[in-house]
Image (cartoon, rainbow, N blue to C red; front, side, top):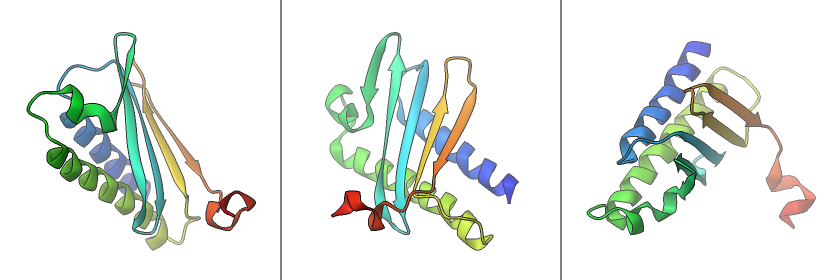
Length: 123
């Protein structure tokens, strides 16, 4: 299972790396997944400037909202697949994952297991 998780995380990182059309210094991915619902976004840093993934089609000429939508779908379903690995192996199901790759290419991953759908914050 650990190897499946690692492989899926690397797949997410590699896909996002390909989405970013210039060399980046650091990025964070946040995936909020509940089965096949939820969302995903990322921020990446170039020099001292942080760029939000949902702004990419406004920033980069030739990268349309439609292309971004296709890329968003791909990374979202990669995150769904990551959560499915946990389901298939009878592991606790996380609700949110944050993937961070720093300027030294060090990878950190944080899983959040809060059940936000049934919390007082979802009233």
